[in-house]
Image (tube, rainbow, N blue to C red; front, side, top):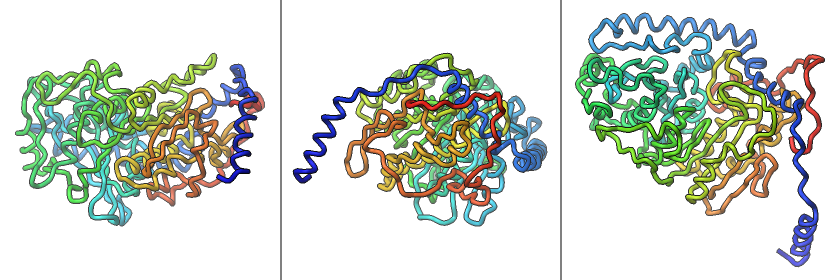
Length: 511
């Protein structure tokens, strides 16, 4: 820097030291009401529109009838047949449908969506799909996505699977035991109640490992389930018998594409707890993305209770933090309860701070006006979500995995982007015309190293940091990123005026 530049920089530092930071304004109920209103955006502007509802009823009903031939040829009446009727979402109707715009994704000439079945370690039959594109390199990195629970079938995560497949990954989505069209119970006998109820956690922790085992299988090394954690029983006989009948897959159909040296995992809710723990232990995993929310391994309530007495899986109480992980969260949880005061701004950052202390790259991004369902597409007003939260989630998921799994240097600019601080699509639907998708209640933070060795540390992405800059990539939607350009949203959604009695977002320096 020349002399005049150094002088200018010094003056700026001196002046900034003389100016006290703006005091945070007091909690404002009107601002909070407008923030809560954002949780209705998805249904108001997208899934609740007549066009989408017609598609939902048409495709969802057809999907529901798929179970008839399944149960006729491979149902509870058959030996080792499937039994998913204890699951809330086996029908794929209404809120269980996921985003029906992806139902025909694999009918595109460049898209491959292969259904797979395999036997979990406790003998339950697991249902899943492998996503990839026809075009692309001969070897590609891979991602396994673990669902949330009560009830969250794999269809709810099509947004991430399709976007990652289009970005050059092979992706495995799967229903943990007790979810979607995977079995409700373990194999008959000693393991029948293993993993029941699924919300206790075993199907998510054990299942993430089983899904990775299946993902890594090949014709030379066919998939065979590990011993049951609870009884030590081997259900290899069931897997082999179902393969022989043409029901289960003997190995991952995408094995020829998968670069086994580059694999990441993504999880939501209870699945987030599972990938936060399993990802640190499993040497096959290079990076983690956790939706609502990342936890330091060994600190979630499930980590303390998930044991494997048979020794089929190693389960130390507190695995070390060694893999880079990104947490994504939202202002509101499963039930949208309006705030009565300002919450702790660091309440979402416990895992982030643990990762920072361990010296491992990490981040925590919190969506303004978002909910637990911003990360799973449920087209029902009882499961509220913001409109753009899922776009932000797909963006950061792809960028994080590109950086730490794929090894793509272009991911640096996408992680350091300032685009979500002034998003035109969000401003078009926001009650106050704002376009900053980052929570003003909770701090969004990054602490990472770029591919060229630069340290990026930003403790308030909403306010902005020197490290953030435009990425230069133009408009983004997860639909377009996932190859559904025909279903992309209009650039300027028509926003009906708020009712006269509705609160108006006041002008505030910090909100």
